[in-house]
Amino acid sequence: MIKQKIVLRYPPHVVEQPTIYHLIKDFDLMVNILRADINPKKEGRLMMELSGEELNYQRALEWLREQGLHVIGLEQQIIWREEKCTHCGACTVICPTEALAFNRPEMTVSFNEDKCIVCELCLRACPARAMETLVDNNNSVK
Amino acid sequence: MKVSRSIEEINEKIKSGSAVVFTAEEIIDLVEEKGIDEAAASVDVVTTGTFGPMCSSGVFLNVGHPSPRIKFNEVYLNDVPAYAGIAAVDFYLGATALPEKDPANRVYPGEFVYGGGHVIEDLVAGKEIRMDASAYGTDCYPLEAINTGFKLAEVNEAILYNPRNAYQNYNVAVNLGPKTIYTYMGILKSNLGNANYSSAGQLSPLFNDPLLETIGIGTRIFLGGGTGYVAWHGTQHNPSAPRCENSTPRAPGATLALTGDLKQMNARWLRGLSFLGYGVTIQVGVGIPIPILNEDIMKYCAVRDDELMAPVVDYHRGYPYKEGEPLGEVSYAELKSGQITIRGQKVPTASLSSYAGAREIAAELKEWISSGRFTLTVPAKGIPSIEAGIQLNSLPQRNPEREDDKK
View 1 (cartoon, each protein chain N blue to C red):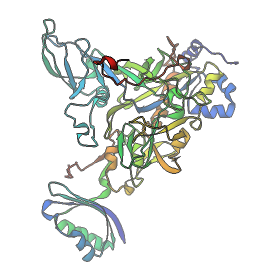
View 2: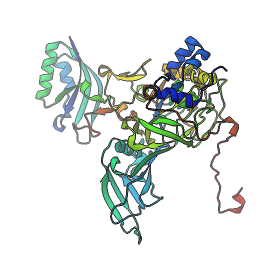
View 3: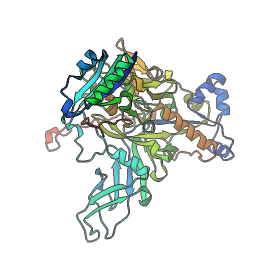
View 4: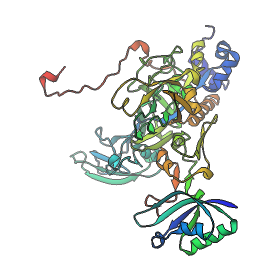
């Protein structure tokens, strides 16, 4: 068994394809969708957790790539610029999954990528703008 | 009182490298262990610190004259407007100034990506600042426009002058309304979704000298990573705020106007900030040394978070429309635990002021004093305290053109 959080990037020509149906039906994977959006340029982004047999998972990724989709690890989506962080803690009540947490008694902020679901609320909640994403506002890869 | 120390005596010890210095956090343990009298007898200085957003901040610049000379009418630094209504090439850049092209809250909540606070951070970091200025031209100042660039090292003066810093206590902000609101106290989720506070509590300078017995005009301090001075009391200074038994205010109280040479400061402790839906500001690092002149001063410095109280204020209606009373009081110990209870509801807390930063500033100032680099000052003049009887005013709302509307 394998369990992975990934991001799929859809170029405009495949954005209308029923990818998830095939992941379940053809590869016997369990799909837990965390977030999905399509930008005005008709590029799509889908964040999800996939679990199933290792072989099926690997075959599924191969198939996704053959369809022209980009597969990226979820943990690469949100970056904590620690050198910019002032450790105030303002983000920690906005982050819904405690990926951004406040450590006591150190009174410092920490970021746990594994808990991040890429909701992106922290990007604008951080006054020092220490949280960054590789994706710009129009959802295309920088 | 057995201990009676003068600032001159403390400075002699600092110069000889024998001064005993504790931070306002470390002193708590010492006093708990040894008691006030023994701690006062053995410690010369307690250092404090705070590193929070302080909107009432800015810098006076004199950039020197180009050739031919110019008298600025409008000045923009990286598109951010500065105030040029003073002498020819003097101007003031405020921390909350926004570029004219910034959409502000026209797209709500506005992002406020760059403004005055960020220009100050970039200046201190030694970055090139783009300058666009215009003038109407005079016989003595003929140049009518200039587009150029400069760095901090190339200006004549850069004087940080912050009219209100180091607030002695502040509101805990919550939102009783049905929608998320975007404030200078951060994002406040609906129906008491979170409570945001902004003070270093037991490390905060004015919580450790609640009646302003040692801090006065001319007091030398840590400001923005360099040396600064207390210039005056700050705007909205309110020593008449209600107080706890330990003399600390239970609402926003005293404030300080601070000044210093920007050229010797550090961008680490002057950080431009973007508050979603509110605007830009600057996070300022301030540290103030407190001379332990006697046991009373030591007692004040030993104050703990569980003895410092802050009012909980609704920012949906209460603060903006001056409606109602605070929802209650909580201690800084409760705030720092991560959760408080308001109206029977458990509410998660977050700080806007960096306690880790405050701790580092107090430790750095301690190091400066211990190593003999930084001596203490006798204030030139005290700062108004309780006996001044200051009452804060509200802006009159009347029509000066109408006789019957004048008071």
